[in-house]
Length: 414
Image 1 (cartoon, rainbow, N blue to C red):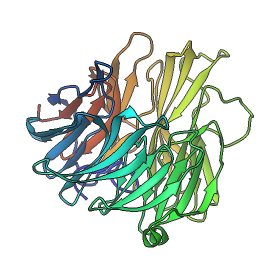
Image 2: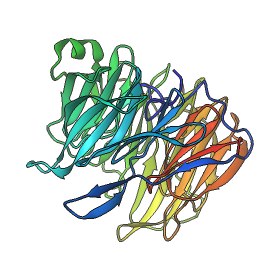
Image 3: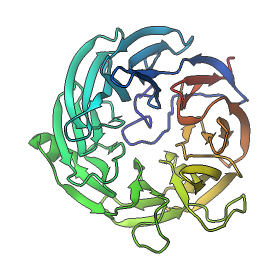
Image 4: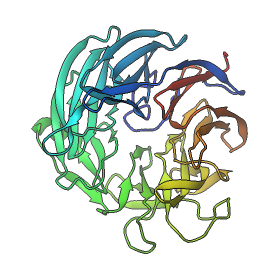
């Protein structure tokens, strides 16, 4: 699989592109595309979107906004643009010469959630091929190259490559928004309302209706499962600790949790408990954990602890950890004292791991893009002019999506 066709590269969410050869030395900006916005006619307001996570295929990079915009990967020049008047794009997937755009309606439905749609576009021209309804308030999709899974407020919906709806997993108590699925040859791993489980892909595709899980774990009100990653050894599911969580209140602890294919718990990698800034004062805080990147039996994850005051992050510490995917043992850790406001999933390519450390605590609106070797040695670090929230790698370029809707390409060929 070339390019970067899904949010975390492939259906397994590995964030590992074995075909990429990104910078080994400090890179520079090769191109930067404008912030993508959505104009609400009803509110007479222009919103700067945080849905510009790029996907890359066949020498083109696709970015979401008030529609989809296609750029040349070498120059950053715009190739085509497909705008919507009443919808904005929340996520993209590229497969079989098509771009699948998950769109959310501008106005909420009678039930309180905006309607969602899957639009299939010709990747070369932007022409709309098909549109299907995917349910209320959709989120970012996942593809394995043959099918697309769309999480929504009330469950997950599976589509084939042509955009036809094939199955649905219902969630009758949508307390926590679901995350993107992970897809393997025979299963789909889903999270909804704090519950994480494995579903049979074969039976769901045959029935074409709602399906039951083979197993599920930890249904909890205040635990948020981030997108799982499937390795050769296990399924790794990240768990975030919300500010309202109470120590010792039960449920699954924050960090990474690994399960066998039968649902057996295997190991737990906790978030770091010794924080670099020395701020261990009581008060509200949040532990954020990224979905891990995995390659060659080693996983990489970022985690951040945020001090919280009056609804805003006032300080943070971030760590990048490498771990053994079989045992869960930590191999090395890089720390960023006093930096970070979120845990952005790292990416792996050519034996190196790349991570973006965003910081919008206080008045800061910057990020740091870093590269580490297989043994944890830092190769380089560059500042990013904006708050990064997503990272992708294709060819010789690292793509950083910023909170203002911009996408910046970094490469040695600057």
